[in-house]
Length: 383
Picture 1 (tube, rainbow, N blue to C red):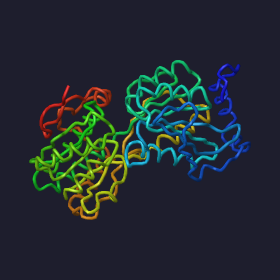
Picture 2: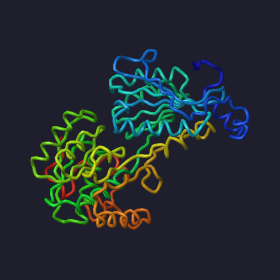
Picture 3: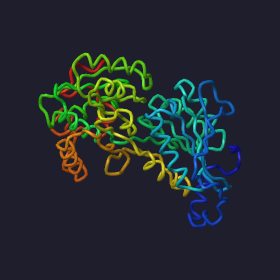
Picture 4: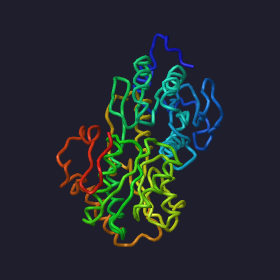
């Protein structure tokens, strides 16, 4: 446990250690198991409420850094929390001086308590991995100025609280191009969580990608008003199947919509994680995350005393997000089209929002103010 009443704050100690240099730190490292193997206990932790589990990985020693993650759903199923936990495991394996901890299935209403437990304990930095954690995390960050906080997908920052997200709309656009190429009915389906800018941005990018290769393609959306609710996600997918969609996409924390599409024998596009094993020959691809590309440098900055609150929003060029491998039946035409567009994005020659209602809008607008559909999406965004 870290005593926050020590004369020197944790932040001051980390800065002093950073001034000594990484080489000096490595020379006096306490070692540990190197973080090379999975050591998650998945047992109830002290003070953790019902319905949550905790685990840990990593090294030990007086100079080690402790990072904690809080997830809104279980990590076991392929989805949002799974992707973040893969990032956690990757950095735990990379750094023998890093100890990681996590708590899964934490409802937003319970998150402030979990953040505070980590802040009162030995966590040097805490990652909150869903939008609804924003206000609870900000409240705790204000009370614990010597602990660093990072909030995923939100828009608030403080002196000791940064925010991070990736431009997943880029691989969404590419997946939309593939969908627009393979569709035969020109009707695409999309099972979406909440009508917030993050989700609307993905819907619009997918639709623009489809329209860029097929000007007859339209996108139908069904909302679940939940990040993780497999039965409701399946119900929404089945409703779209009744409307003659022949390619299904999703923005959810489980693969339920993808499963429903595959079971119906139509093309299936997942999200968050590789899902080819689930959809089989009906698999198109998935926009996926590589969160270790953010977690690694961020945790290094904590250790060397250079961490600063900032806004991270990088794209496929930074490696934070990408498209998964293609399904076994995806035609070469779709692969070639997407490959060309991906290269154009990397070269700065293709802007996803070009020739749309959002061309020229600022990053601030795209990130937190987008609230309407592009022309290729049917209907209107619900209030």
